[in-house]
Amino acid sequence: MGRVVMLVMGTLLGLFVVFNFLLPLLAGLLKIALVIGVVALLVFIAVTVLGKSRSH
Image (cartoon, rainbow, N blue to C red; front, side):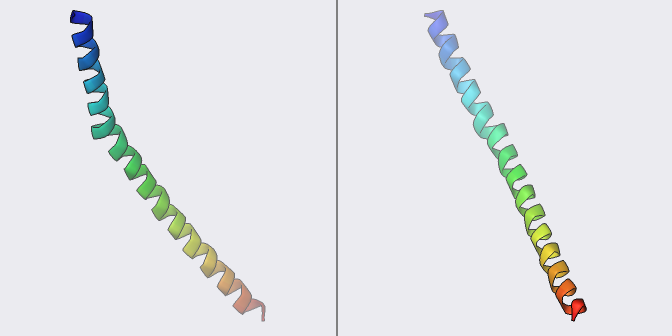
């Protein structure tokens, strides 16, 4: 009976850690990656437009 209780408590603690710590961390990393990607896209577009306008 004690093993079953410890198993249930361990499972609940594992789920608590996943939902309260790991998922927000992954969401934050995804947001940072998205912002970096958008900035890189804007820089690429700016360099492309400036390069085409100066070549003429």
